[in-house]
Amino acid sequence: MSFHVTTNTDPFDLPWLCEMLKGSYWGHGLTDEKIAKALEHSVNFWIHEYEGPDVTPVGFARVVSDHAIFSSLMDVIIDPKYRRRGHGKKLMQAVIEHAAVRETICVISTRDACRFYNKFGFQTFHGILMQRNPS
Image (cartoon, rainbow, N blue to C red; front, side, top):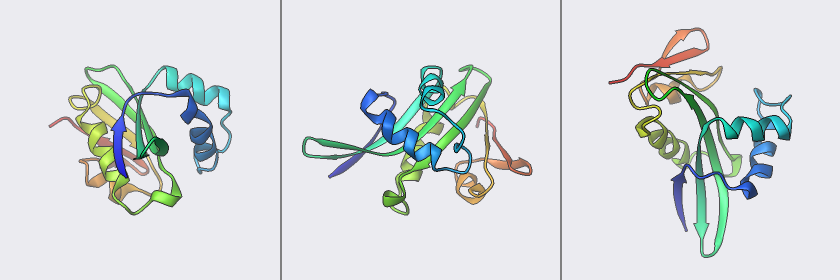
């Protein structure tokens, strides 16, 4: 079995993502339609498990970016069955190295993962808002 991060959005992943986001503290009021529309206007990062012909979504993150100055990281989530195995780190490394993020000021709002995002250069800016400046 192997795990890979891609920026391809495959329609078969949408039901998994909707279930994950609706179960999160920030996405409980979202509809499937709003989630699908948000994906159309974002750079989407997926981490999948590949085992033979089977492909299973494991995690997701999305970025809204002007690709020059500013980006916003949102909806970072790892399936609870796959947490604490390094998948979030692998996903975040791909996000911050991507051209839509790498040279931008990137923000994220989180109430419970500040220490995790600190590892990727994010610093608390105002309470739950965190910012990462380009290096």
